[in-house]
Image (cartoon, rainbow, N blue to C red; front, side, top):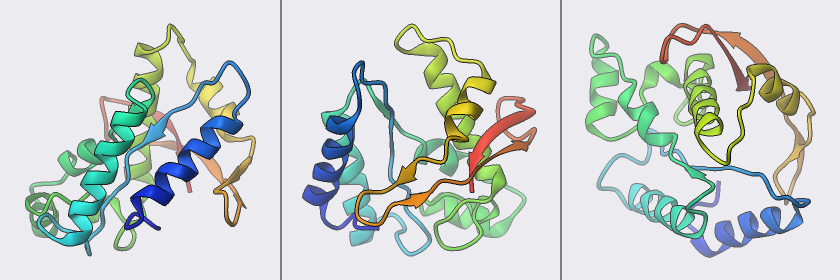
Length: 167
């Protein structure tokens, strides 16, 4: 929620990474823009710059999930077409201006799963990911809150039928 302060976000992520036990195994996901940050706006430019900075600082541990979400628009839904032209994740995958619905989280989960399969020599099973996400560890550093992860079924992305999502 503080993408306008790139230095703060980078410091927060660095603090989280530093606090991880060794060996450090983590993944930094890209920041999403919402309907209030379409291409060409100041907010959009800040988010793109922040994602570029995160990718530069954590090149081996950064995953762009924003681009696959934007690409997953439904060409049969006029608002999705508008969102795509504005480089925004589509409305059909969001329940409000920014937060994802189950289909959006299934795409993110599939991206994480594929990343894990192809990096660091780790070959996870979907059950491994579900178990890790079910731990309910606090999320955030200023006001931690418990995570609520669930298993969802979706044929939306890469033919996946089951994925783990964050609600």
